[in-house]
Length: 209
Image 1 (cartoon, rainbow, N blue to C red):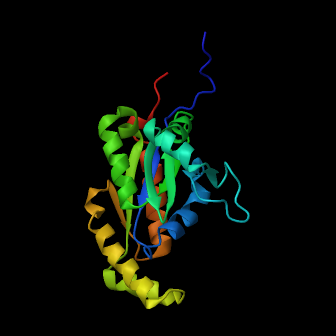
Image 2: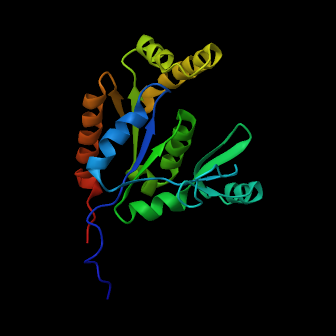
Image 3: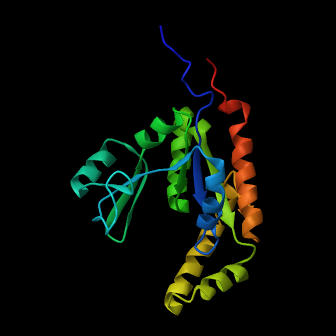
């Protein structure tokens, strides 16, 4: 006889968070995540070499290109991409194992990665029911440019490239389930927190035992 007393009373969520550079998405989830609890970051696979201080299995799963290609062939990734000659991918098992234990998993990914997950949702009921797509929007394109320039850490060429990429990403915001406009960090972090708490209490999250 199975003992379900230790089983979580809800399934976890896969929180797909996107937004252009300068939108403040990392500041928002860092400000909110400590008070929420029950959220973990997905650990991705990568073919790049570890940087000083990075730990295999904590920061990334560092694997060979041959192993990465074999995982692609096995359809093991929920999403994957090649960036500047290095490959990155999120394992389906990494996501499903956590949500089945009632843990919410946060993925900070670009619109291309989100599109792959959206396509996966159309083929998998389990992923469809777990995924929530959240887009962090700056209050205006002009404010986004001001924030990028205020950093004072990038060349003009880099800023213009980021702005061009941001415009393309913002054009996809309507494809997301939820949009949070970051006109004030404290307000946006509260909106993010309230959104997660509300989604957790949705009837479809309850596990029937």
